[in-house]
Length: 604
Image: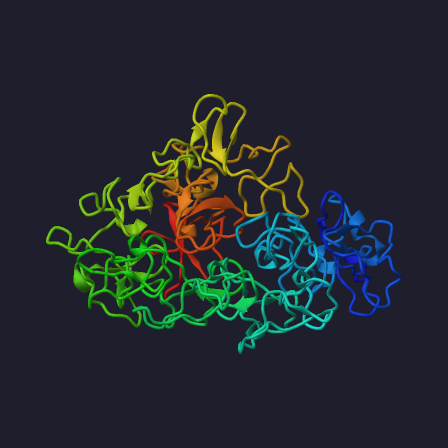
C-alpha cells in the first residue's frame, strides 16, 4: 500500500500501534480474509489460522495482517515515511500525531483531521485517538472500536468482509459483509465511508477519500447510536443500536439548523452564521453562553431569554421563541459593528430589553441582543464601558456583556455568571485569576504559577515568562526557530530568549511573548480560560485550546489539541485563525499587534 517513490520523503511519521500490537488491521475483501470471529471460527477459504505473519496479533478475536509493504511498523520518528506516501480510504492505516499529512491525499490521521499546519494534531476533542478506550466506533477517529480500543485502521465500507459490526463504517455486518445502515431513508454517506466529493457525505466533508467530521457532534443524517451523539440531540435509535441523526423541527423553535450541523450559508442556521471551525467543512456557528432559539437544550436556564420578561423555555429539547420580542442573548436582524457598520440577517430587530439599539455583533461575528438598554446606556451592555457592563459575579447571557477581563461561564451550580478566568481547578472552573496569563513574568519556583497550557520558560539568561511551549515542526530541531517568526525553541525546550514579558518596553508585537505591544509596552492578551477551565464554546478558551463538551451536555472544559483559533477566540499575526475567519482588533480593523485581537467572520 506504500507508494514506491521513497525519494519523496517529507518528514516525520509515526504509525500508531498499541503496546502489544495493532488493535485492528485492514481486512481483505476476498475469501481468505484473515479474520476470525470471537468464537475462534474461521471465514470460508481461510487456512484455519488467519494471517500468520510473525508480527500479526489478535485483540477481541480479530487477526491483524502484516504491515503494508512489510515495513510501516519499522518507520521511526527520525526518518520514516510521510503520511502522504500511504494510501487512504476505508480500511487503510491511519498515522499518528506529528506525522506529515494532507487533507487531499495520503493516509488519514489517527487523531482526527489533518491540521492547517500540515501535521496530524495531538489528541483532541474532535474524536478519540487510535489506542484509546472506547465503547462504540462512532467515538473514534478511525470510526472503528475493536476490543474496547479505537483501531489503528479506518472502518470498512459497504461490501467489505467483516466478522463484527464494529469493523464496518455503518456498524452493520450481515452475512459476513458490511451492509448499509438499516431502516433509514437517508442516502448520504456516513463517517468513514468512501467518497470523492464532500456533497456525498452527511458531514459535507470528504478528506483522504473518506467522509470526515466537520464538528464534534454528528451531522443530520450521519450514523449514531444515541441521541447525545447528534448535533440536534436526536438519533433514530437511542438504545445502542445503529441509526441516523434526525433533523428536528418544532418545539416552538422553528425549523432552523442547529449549531454544529453542515451548512453552505448562514440563512438557515439558528445562529445565522456559517463558518469553518478548523476541520475543513463549514457548520452553523456555535455561540458562547446561552443557547439560541432552535438549538438543543437540557433545561430552561441554558436558553437565551429564559427569564420572566422574555419567557423562553426549553420545549421538547429545543429553546423556543418565548414572547414576540427577541430574548437577551438571542439573534437579531441588524447587528451594529464596532466601526459603526451594520450586518443584516433574516431575523427581527425587536430585542426585548432595548429593541434595535442593543442589537450588536458579538466577538464571534453573530448579531445578538445585548440587553441592558437605558438612558444611561443607550447601546445596552458594553464590555469596554465600566458603567455599562455586567460586573463580576452577576448573571449574564454571553461574554460580550461582561466587563473587560471577565467571561460569561457557568458557576458551580451551572448558572452563567461574569467571572474572572482562573486555573480551572475548582468546581466552578477555578475562577479568581490565580494563574499567570501568557507573557506574565515568572520564576518557575514558588512564585507566579503559569496557567495550564503554558510554561515558565526563559526569555533571557536571568528572566522567565509564561509561554506556550514551542513544538518543532518538520525540518526543525529543538534548537530551531518558529516558522512564523515566533519564539522558536532551545535545547532545553525554552523559547529561545527572543520574546519579552508583559510590561517590558517594545516597538512591535513580535517582540512580546503575548504578541501584543500596546503603548510601547508588552501587554497581556484578552481574558480566556486556561487548560481544564470550564467553557461553553471555543471562544472561552485560550489560544491552542478548544472547548471539549461531553456528549449531551452544554458545558465542557478547555483542552489541548486545537490547530487554529476559532471564531471569537484570541489570535495574533503569528497565530492565525481557522480558514474563512479574519483576525481583528476591538475596532474591527486587521490585527497589527498593538491590541488584543479575536477571530471573526469576515464582513464583506
